[in-house]
Length: 154
Image (cartoon, rainbow, N blue to C red; front, side, top):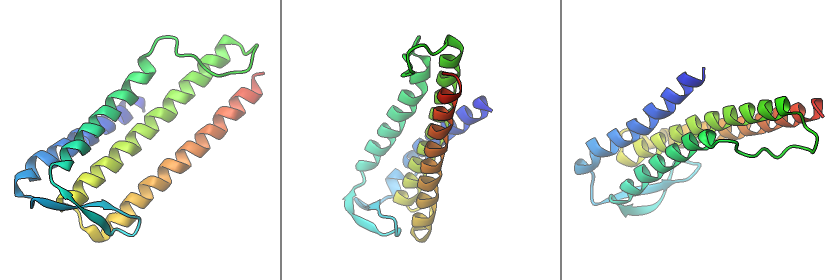
């Protein structure tokens, strides 16, 4: 499951790069960006701003991939918590982080698609809104599970 999620996040990041690279030369000098919840563009920006989008996408991907690889990353747990419980908390926190990474990469991919005109701007609000709602639900449910885990193993 974790490997599949990692591959999905990697695909989303690479697809964001691919969309920008393929569509860049065909774009007008000024493009609509960013989009609000209703799918309407707030303003215009130079198409060079798309390179900032893919750079930020790559940075966040690398950051969210690197955090679980930090050895002995401290866990904020009550004093006296057993090492097994701390490892359980750490593994659940990293699973949450992986889910967040997949959703964040999907949001950047959607932004790249809308900004380059591949996707219909009419669907921007529903797609981005659904991704954002999924992200919020994932975080809330996961934090509730973490608190329950800590409470059970005091």
